[in-house]
Image (cartoon, rainbow, N blue to C red; front, top):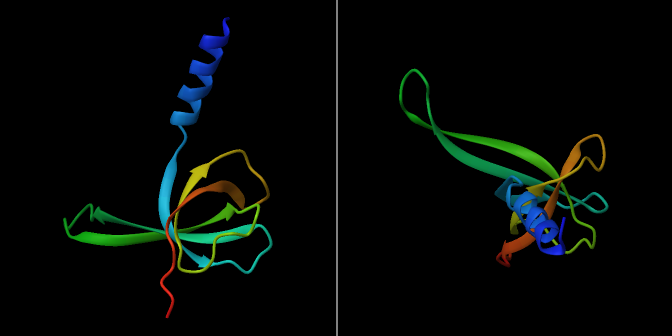
Length: 97
């Protein structure tokens, strides 16, 4: 395998990771933020659009993300019992109130 093929394989696997966008709702734990991901789905029986949400624990190595920030998280290898997501980038800083 050549170097070009190995870099192409690495890029294709990185491209296929699941990413979600959500808002940080807690930053109290060391190196961890809790991200609330909200999505809108159609109810199976009634057809009404319903809001669904789920919280994910994501790894934040430097502690740079705070409550209210809009972030993108990517799935990775399990880091702890509840944490297998990593914050990849900041999309919007929280507004100061």
